[in-house]
Length: 272
Ligand SMILES: [Zn+2]
Image 1 (cartoon, rainbow, N blue to C red):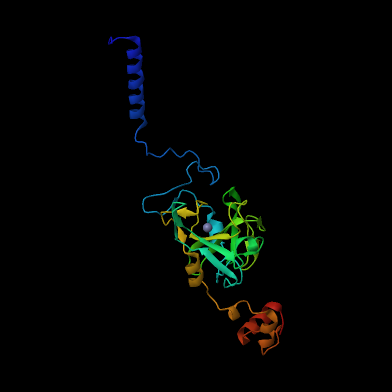
Image 2: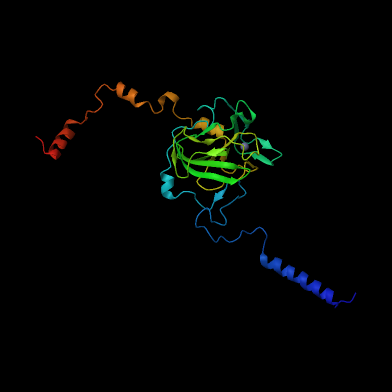
């Protein structure tokens, strides 16, 4: 084989070119430059996962004003069945390893006790007072999803996520109260028997993500979190107005002022 055979020369040039290209390109793992951070929908690098497993959000989903106006949720309840999750069971608890999916389950799979599709169309309730941050279908496998934002009593910003819904009953930006119906139990376009995939996250950023992960990310154990944030007992929550009125010894509509305040008010009103 001649060294300066045209084919050999071409091969040398191609190999050399590839080598130069790889050298100029730098390490494969370097991140692309971030060119758009206008908002979370157009950002070209919204989220990446560092080695400690905590997502670092490049973007906040909420403005500073929205963040301070998140409702303070004094109590968290089960999102299906009764407030206490009655008539439901958890078919795949948080952090259970799922070999087929290659990761730990990052939520709870709540089902009606009848099993299979008997809970299809059952109401899904807001776990706590909150604001609707997301209400859409990110993919076929996820189906319809609602994400609510809450201010926990301990100051944390928590998200509750309700996935595989059959129907969404709330709009983005709406304020919801604990126990409001936000959608119905679904099958994620027939991918699964009907159930509610329910997650709680400590977050103010954006990542719908996946239902399984080897890393803890920002996911919290929903059952344990609800238990910890249960808050006030049933009979201490928002007593009916009539019972409050009847419990008062004084008439409901009397203006109660100290003698000093009454005198000041009299001056202001120009009375004696
Ligand atoms: Zn699930």
